[in-house]
Image (cartoon, rainbow, N blue to C red; front, side, top):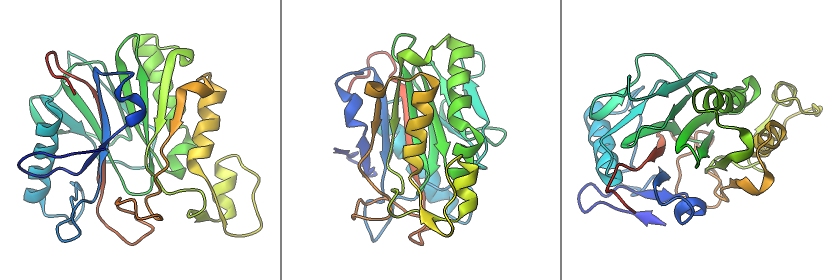
Length: 256
């Protein structure tokens, strides 16, 4: 499903698996939109800064949230916790340091990551209304970004894995993502003799289940960022642009 602003025309797809189950949640991802004017949300790199800022503001307006925060991503395992004491000011905010994940329970605060083949991992504790959003490429997956995110939720909100919900968003699919044996080794998989496709989302599903998340609470997007004409940016496909995955608890009075 695609939502649009009357002004700004934000190309956005919701996590349909959660729309009815969690009406208090805002979860989804932008996509490329118009081929003539791609909806690029890069903030670190050579993207025109003024246009990117306006598009982030348009996305924030679409959500109905008060603020959105993102960070410079380094394919690591740092997950920032945003609570009432350190919540950012209203508007579009960048974290002070690098991070590849965010966690919050603050209503009206939207957390965001940017992706273009890597997996956006959405995690929700519906009982505590706490959420985490993680950027998981193969390096982050191998280093344990998912385990770190689950640990942060448990330490801050006592979120047991058994009651969490996990969604793996649009990313490059297993058939398209050919990598060398060293990647399989890093992911704890049997190493093939040469370049072979790997399914990072499949690895993340196994990690989530091993951590205690129920199989019936894990969903995986059918979209591949490289094949199938899904409308997403793909680094492997030669695109420098980035889409933004976002997640947050809707502010009081804001409904789908």
